[in-house]
Image (cartoon, rainbow, N blue to C red; front, side, top):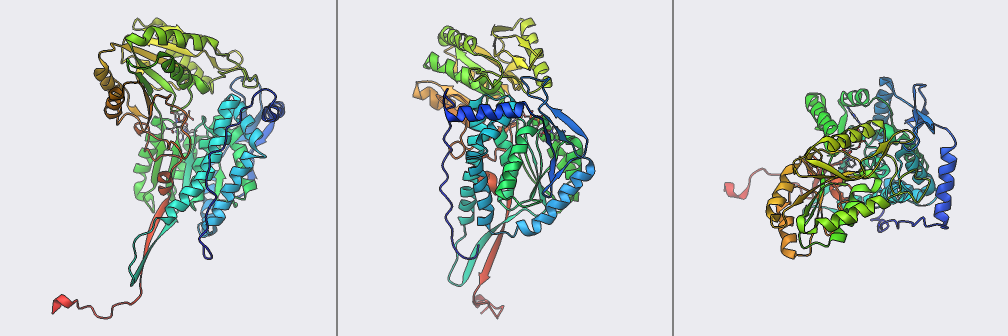
Length: 541
Ligand code: NAD
């Protein structure tokens, strides 16, 4: 920027539309859904601004109607990944030199395109690809992605304004350079917003990107790329490849120019990728930045002073919205015995009232889980709970994959606080509850802290302020996002920066300046005005 200190628009959260019966937004999204569901799309990869079709295709089907094909996508050979890398490095020559306000303009435009002309399309694509209800699609693929794009521009300028002190004879300034080389974004199926944000926020900071979306999110990834193209992301800045994750990753990580991994997905995969980077470390020109947000075993603990109806609602919403497939979804709960009868009755009543089916029918609260692998895994844990003597299913427990991957929202009650489903991430509509002696609150907090390897989200419900304070302290390290008297899901960009520690990730807080700082390498510039001409200091006499 050479000709002004520009202010960026003040970022505000995108309002969530209601989609109530009769509303124009409901009509628009249902029309888009029908059109897309009843036609077939052929999704190319996107390398150096070109649509790349390899002829090696896979089909795409909605999880709630797995025999219905909505399209195909093309998968990469090694040479395509190499081309994506080469093209990114070439694009870096101009992109990394472009003034920041030009980059900001592109991503602010992308936000407005999603808020307006692409809103129905990106929501419908997310309903079809990931089986989200319209509300879940709206808060993800429209609002959260818009918020990421808007707030990141503001965070970028906040970072740029962080400057060191200067003196009258020396001017100190910091330049927030993009990383040298290219970056790699690997994104999960469960949030269209995360899929868009991971490559976009690195590109916003001046980096070039190879992006590999999840196989289960390609339909909505295609809309993201259409938006980025229309917003004016130049050729080669974000390159999208699909297909075998191992081959793609091996090719990316074999490059000496690989300079950063921005990952969201499961813990095991992230650890494997970290290991691979470590094994290749002698080959890289720089130390690659590694950012990963990974799994969770998110908890709700109620104190004996809590309101039973509030606890039950936190469970019903926190565990079952989007079929529990949010990294933040509550999947273990600790309820004191004085509240249990009431909480149990309310939760059973809620779960029995949920309607399950296609997201096209907007009265459904529950839709399908993402794919057959997830369905089979969940069915296995449900069957085990039916057979185990220390577990009992108090509501739900049925499943059916004849048309879509439908798992009934299920509540397991266990007498064993270390029962497998209290510790393992299942990533589905299943919560396990342990009822504790109301007078053993402190011991139970310790149990919450020690039961799982994860530390993503958690919630305490209580009216007793001493109990809230005790939980806040005792659970300090077992949640990166901690909620008091709320469900543990629903973080909003700019309000609750998101991320966890322990096995849940590097906690670089998506939706904050902290995350963007990982994608720059500051250069300190000191300019001296009157340069010394004699090496001797006065003390030398
Ligand atoms: P996943 O780990 O199966 O896949 C994530 C990405 O990694 C996909 O693009 C996938 O193709 C890729 N991948 C898979 N195997 C790979 C390999 N061997 N090498 C390289 N890449 C590989 O996760 P998912 O099922 O898409 O998403 C669910 C997981 O993501 C859950 O564990 C959830 O907790 C986590 N998640 C965490 C957050 C967070 O912010 N902490 C947010 C969303 C999801």
